[in-house]
Structure formats: C-alpha cells, structure tokens
Length: 310
Image 1 (cartoon, helix red, strand yellow):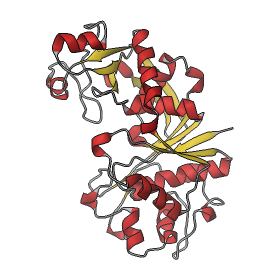
Image 2 (cartoon, one colour):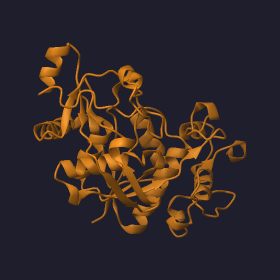
Image 3 (cartoon, helix red, strand yellow):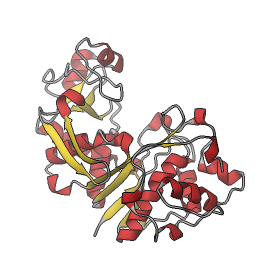
C-alpha cells in the first residue's frame, strides 16, 4: 500500500499556499488509492501557537480534505527521536556541537547555502567524545549534528525532476537534535515517516534541499530501502517573490471562513493554480478528482496578487 502524510505545523494559520500543497497531496492520494495520515509537526516549541493545531484540522475539513489516520502529534514521539540520535552517536555518524548560531555565521570559512544560511564549518566535529564531555568542558549546552560525508546525493523527484547535491559543500553538517534535546525537523520527519510506512511525500519546493539530508539519515539508520518518493511543488509567493506572509495581506483560510466565503470559491482558485479550469462559482474538492493531472500543474511559482482576492 502507498502511504502519504499531510503534515501542518501549528506555528501559524494555514494560508492559501499551504492549502494548495495539501490539496495536491490529497488529490494524488485519492486518485491513487494511497492511505493518508494526518501528522501535526509541533516540535518547534517557542513558535507553536495556541490552538493552531485545532484550527488547521478545522480548515482542512472545511476545504473537504480528509484523512485515514491521525492526527499524530510529533510531541508525543520524543523517545523515538532520542533513540535515533543515540544510534547515530554510537556509530560515529553524529557528534556534539556547542557552537552558537552567531559563531557559525561569523566563521570566516563558512560558505552560505542557496537559502542564505551558513554552511557549518565543522568546528566541533571530532572535538568531543560525547555530548556530556562537550558540556563538561565548555559549560555550554550541546546540540547534536549529523556528520555529512563527502559525497553527491542524487534522486529523481516525481515533479521537480533529477536533483543532485554536493552535500558537504552545499549543506554541511546539520543539526538533528537541538541543545534542549528537542529533535530537529530533518531527523523527526525521517523517524516518523518510517514508523508510519510513508512511501510518498508531497511538499513545497522550499524543502527540496531537505531531501538529500533526509536521504543521508535513512542510509545512516540502515533504512535505505524505506526512502519515499518525493514530489516537490513550486510555492505560492507574493509579488515580491517571497513566500506568502502577512505582508502580502491576509491569506489565511480562517480569514476567508470568517468573511463567509464558501470553500468552493477557495477551491476554485486553488484548482486554477493546479492547472484546472474551474467554474466561476467554485468547486468542491471531490469534484477536482476527475480533472486533476499532476503533469499539467504549472512548473513555475504562483504569484498571489490582488487579482486573486476572493
């Protein structure tokens, strides 16, 4: 059986860009007979908004997007992440790091990734025998980084096509557990996707460079045969080319609900952004199943502007 997951993060409200990605995921799943798991990615503690998980669930249901299992909350699965971290430490594929973000940014030798973030220069790699020793010697809390090997990671994305990353030079050693012990995104999604049997991942192409990191983790954990098929979709952005945010106006689904705009009108817009001709009055999610074709989706980013107001 093919399995996918819809995974909102309760760090804010769902907006039109999120909704389009979730809709495509849902359409592919219902067309292909995939099982859908709803996962709430609630590990980013300081950024979690109260009741945002409940709001996301209500917004998805309002659109007509359903699922077969869940919600599963990542915050309930911390022992599983800790076990994976311990396994990687034990095999020498991860190490303790006491560098601050400012120190990484300031490192003269630190290049920058395409998203502008600093590539970690490996300052702490091989320096400490254990996280406990790192804390004892420095008095600083220690995060855990994955030791990225010198290699090229290639994969065939089902939508974006062939991808190739020089992981050591482009991405560098990345954090898999924060200094407070919380699992980082890259590790948590791998552990959870394996546990849920996920075979198909559909998400925005802002996460394209997360894929080589996650492939490395699958391999390091002895799970190379469990790597899913990835589909990375172009984002919906504002006129300035940046991903949708408050500066582009209120595009939250809850905003449209509060205005009394029916979900059919929102789905009509989302359908057009997926390459489907939709009626002016709008359409239901289930009615998009007959006309949606992933190969007809626009290959470029969708630019949200005033002409898209509902």
